[in-house]
Length: 395
Image (cartoon, rainbow, N blue to C red; front, side, top):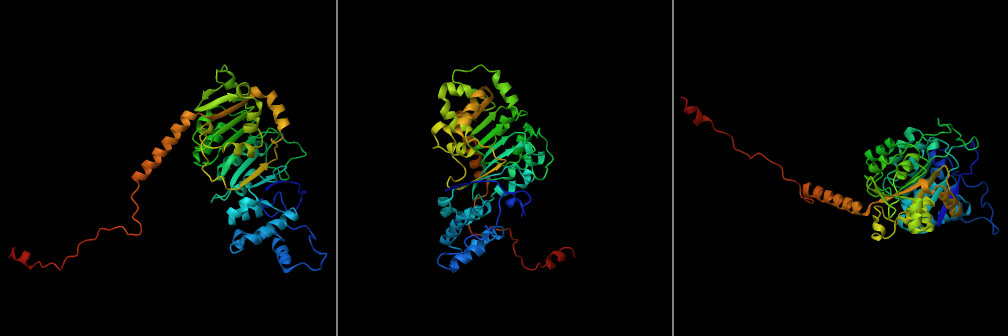
């Protein structure tokens, strides 16, 4: 079962922290208070008491709770439409195997940020990789600090960065110091992501209307070991660079270690449907498509287990899932949409290089000796020294 929730909370509601900027932790007033057969069961009363305020729940409370009881609680939240991200994360952490079969995907679409975007980053992060994270953000609402905190999401597998001006109708409740022009993503931010040695699991990256980005950032992005696809959608400087090339026979241009292809060139060789389905539709769909069997299209296998659930957050909501609308827009902008995929030959060389580096590291590391303690140098014990003979030589 997949869950997609839209932010529809009224302004001014009591908020208990970043987790509850867009959801309410309380059960609906008067929910299931009566029963046609009389008083509810003790189990039902305990369920309502426990779920009355989800903000008070923590994973530790479920340590000794059997899965069948946890599933009963999750189903109860479904009946009252209160399956929140907070509760989903608890279930995914405590019951990773069973819960994946029940709810492998959760998406929260926020109408607009209520706080600076950096306040949201910790919501998606999972240090112990209990789930995979997908993030869509608008640089319209970003500050430089917001963009530099993206690598804090260690389990991030797909990222969509777009730029769309907001109006007074959907401006944040708490101003975050941005204007209608927003802060455009620049190559320096991308280099900062790479230098942080984070984003090791990022597989899909899409830029929309980021006019300051250049192809120089593609050289830095090659350092991300799992990144398979970069989409530049109407990024002015990147478009201008690609337009200097004539269409090659195979429709692919080598650029900074990537295979670059304009969308209209791709359509001429492969047709419209494949490109739309694999690269421009909903980010979750594009990521799942990239996990095809290794060996096909020379794609690298996922470094995270594919049976981990997926948590997606959209700040604010951007809908790329409506196929007809995506097709129409891309037809008008086909010459300004560039797809960058890994060069198959260079990717194989990179993988071999990384394998050699790991083997070299193992050879230089001291061998493990199990439970045997390491021998330490100990001075040999000597008896008391008799210096009488030495002194007699002088007298």
